[in-house]
Image (cartoon, rainbow, N blue to C red; front, top):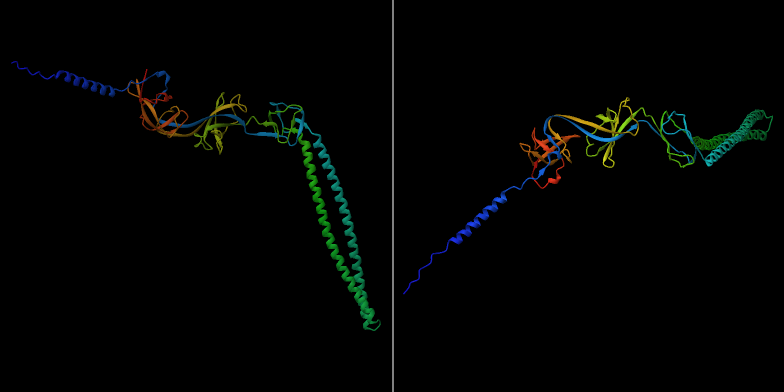
Length: 414
């Protein structure tokens, strides 16, 4: 009887499968730990700068225009039609130079009517004054007559009393004389009161009429000024810069007729970004580039409110300006805020704000790669900014806009 032999266990296939799984896991872990290849950036397309230690001049910059310090705006006092234009923009003028003439028949008629009313009121005033003075003189005459009558009645009363005491006249005649003297005295008192009332009334009526005359004088003067204003004068010495009207054009009150300036005295009006203007104060030094030269000025005034994202800053300039400087010329100005000594600074990165934290690419030794690091910035200037934390002296950083590489931590430079 044959006895079957036991087969040995088949271990080799399981061992190979386990070994293969171990190798696969090791390869997967190894590949997961490998860093992705850094993207390559053309070195010529980025702006590099080196962190330096030393002085830093804080500046802010803005564009603007040259503006005359003395500007005279001439506006229409009354409506009218442009009849004549005697001077064109660019001409030198004096205070009495006739620039243009307007016409308006209605204004001239109103002036004539005002003169007529004034003359009539002045005639009424003179007539009233004569009438009232005549009445006052009549009352004064009545008072004077009664004064004499009272004195005569008093003498007669005294004489009758003396005769009565000597029994030359009777009691009735004496009483009549006394009563007549008393009546005359009372009448005199009443007439005097009437004279006082009349004098007060005379002053009031004359004052009222005089006020009416003065009002009409003011109206007539205003109407004359309206007529005179239709002959437009320069008002001061200078240069006629604007005259935006044509012959036959109708203007209304308040419309700009002309602009006269003094071009020898100019100032610069700069527009500074509102985020950079907070430290600008009157008295700071400023440099203004007129395209034909740079002149030094001083901040004279800072607008109290921002407009369209900018703040207006006025810069006073010296009398002597470069050739070609004229009103409305476009200029660029730089205001010096302060000078910092012994600070770390670097060129201003693209889109960087002062006193903020941002990520910059710092070059590694060798200069072929750059890694992203956080950097804290301090006070800023036009082209440079203070480094507070994150960089050391001698570090090289990329200042260009690197938003396209926000998803990576390092880049290669070629």
